[in-house]
Length: 113
Image 1 (cartoon, rainbow, N blue to C red):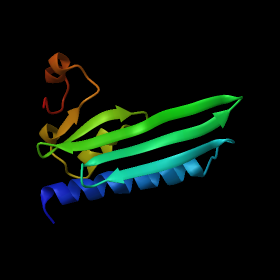
Image 2 (cartoon, rainbow, N blue to C red):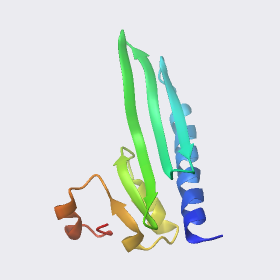
Image 3 (cartoon, rainbow, N blue to C red):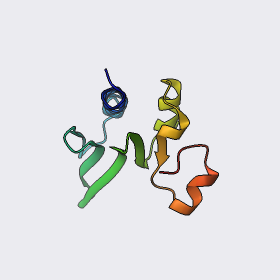
């Protein structure tokens, strides 16, 4: 398995496990959706539905692969998906916190681009 296939597998495994955790404490009116687009290397975990006559669209996780790196665009998990990647042996420089401004990424412990 090459590096990108491994990263895809790690992303999908974490998101699937996290979706199962969310679904073990269901919120009335909300549905958890996993969106895996291997062709474009985009991965989303969202919650959508209706609560109190209000339409909810909430992105829990958005991760993508670009330039052989894992880009975390949104992460609303407690521990952070970056921690999981590190535990799985992904090098810090292969993880980019895309939600951080480009000029601030050099001050994180992760890749800059």
